Length: 310
Image 1: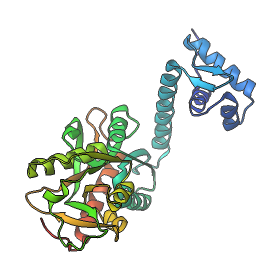
Image 2 (image 1 turned 45 degrees about the vertical axis):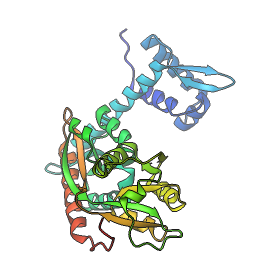
Image 3 (image 1 turned 90 degrees about the vertical axis):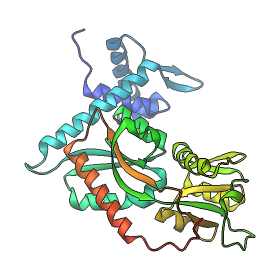
Image 4 (image 1 turned 180 degrees about the horizontal axis):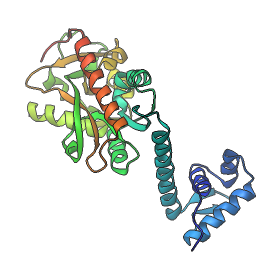
């Protein structure tokens, strides 16, 4: 066919994929439902396949072709926006968009400070910060949805290029209810269920600790976030093994008993990772350098820990 899909049509497909119905998508775009329907029909005629299926009872659903088209359209428009930002930037200044993923466990630790520092130091760079679990961040780097991601170093991180930001020791978390103990022996904790937060991070930490202790907990309980995991531990649902980040101690407060795991247990590394294949833009490199600087500053600001060593 000689006709090409227009940027407007690509935008229509994207909004349609994010909506529950044609009417909702049309309202979002600020056009009539018939105008959007006509646009989508032209798209379907061009690609030779339906992009959505409209059912009166359940609304509208995207077909596999429609979902793939929306994904590609989103990438095209993002890249076009980046190019416009780069070209319009003043000579010698960094510009463009950098999409940075941050582990949900580290949002309080790094994301807020990164946003503030980037606003001051990289005024020409549009920084988009997205929180997610390790699997989400890895998928984002692989697909190109993310340019760089802050995550904990795990065995499969070697599929990405990375720079170390900082290292943090591990803490054992147990319920503080009804316990007058000042110590929380690891061998006693391992008799309880293990509360797991962020599957990849949890398995990485657990593998190191459990292998070193020569034991395994009887059951694993999954929590969708660090705060939920702490609530489960506080309620006596099991024990937790977490990185000793600043936000953990604030969130834990008097709810749980934290014990620092010293040698032979090694600290976990926090890294800035990116795709080997795609590399980093100049803006991405600048954000990476900011992250390294923030990590060093936070490491120097850490107060001595009063937790018991095991």
